[in-house]
Image (tube, one colour):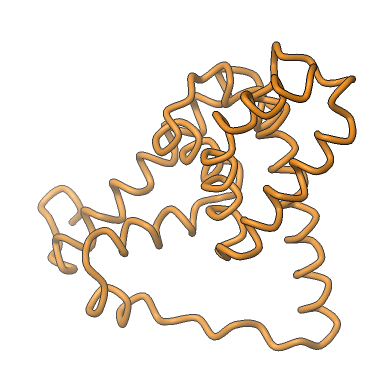
Length: 170
């Protein structure tokens, strides 16, 4: 891939890569740094990079780099660093608006479901691309998105009912 082609292709995917990294890392500055580091790596290997499959290459690279950062964070926490204080769910739903509640619900999903949901719903990628990025087959990507939607819907119904027991739940 030529330098101009790399620049053109990367500009088209960099915002999605940043949003994906930010959704995984929950830190905008780290996400910005990660995308910049990825660009530098791609630049150094631009003669080996092909135009076909560039988006999955970038997104899989972002995922792998995020996983490395998350593993490093976990090992730091295990070595004695204090974990961030978590808010109780009851306090959050009193203070947060609906968007913040949904965001929290998405954060609580298992990692594969959270990633598939983000890539499909937020980024608007097709299931076959989501499957490539997450490293599963297309039906597993569809199932992960479906489970994520179901879990979010179930939790929102609980919140909206304010703990009121419904007839079928008795």
